[in-house]
Length: 362
Image 1 (tube, helix red, strand yellow):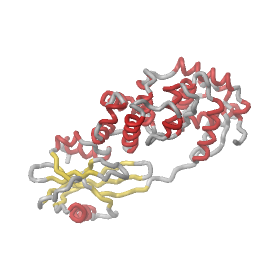
Image 2: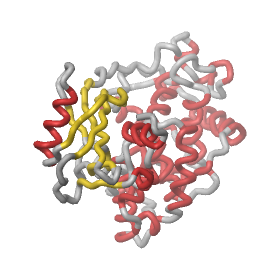
Image 3: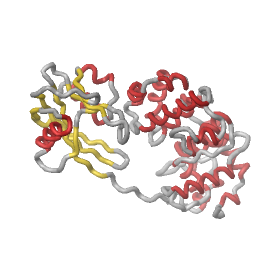
Image 4: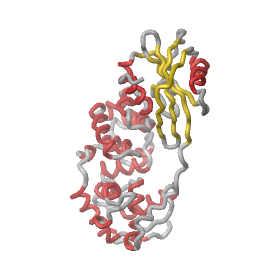
């Protein structure tokens, strides 16, 4: 491994400073009330690419609905997705449930306490495995996420691009070297908490930092330059036309997405990628007929909605319409009353359409 400043770090003093700070200053978060590995697992999955303040109510609702491994393993996927609704990145929920089912079936509903078995579970990567093993079981395993890489890049003046997978390996090796053997939970959570509360991406609060004396970047006035992270490409813009299509009973037509791919298994109002221009309405009517055999009169445009994914940006033009022929029967297409829409899992962009319908602002 490349020779970094950790070899000159006073590890014991660094550990003590960090752990003492965490024990006195850590936030009171619901997943910290005990060391239940299942709850820690759920929280870590939810916290991926999502702010703590956003996660708290979702975590509490999810655990209330699925308090144990058994409860989540035996739940139907649609109920799980509905409970997850609004958090986004729905593959996280599906992978979590699949991994929990593996725990239920293979390990008697007990989350494995060793790296080999826990790393084999669906959706459990090195960070999640390290977090569960260190926090729940006290194992000396690193848990390296973006917060931790930012902290360590400043403490140890590491200039490698943290967006590259090989750089994460470097940080995992370093974290393994400097982790506290006695208080692994407090050490790992301390690094995470420090990155969230003090060593923030912009304007780090260096004067309040409990490990400032160990920070190579602060000593050289370079804390604002690190971490080094290459910029992602801007998301691809995808124009779409979506139809709020009703029948004679004033029910609305919805479609269930395939079980694989983006937003798998979620319900939505039928919509299609379209070309730019003024003929989106005609394109929507044509696609409804060709793809679903639905013949409908598409009327006025109701609203434009934008939604950004990691690599995509949907630009939705929402139209109202009315079927003028019977709709073929198929399992992924159905009419439902407006007041039943809230019982089904919809992506955030289509929840906005539901709200629009319920408020009568069409």
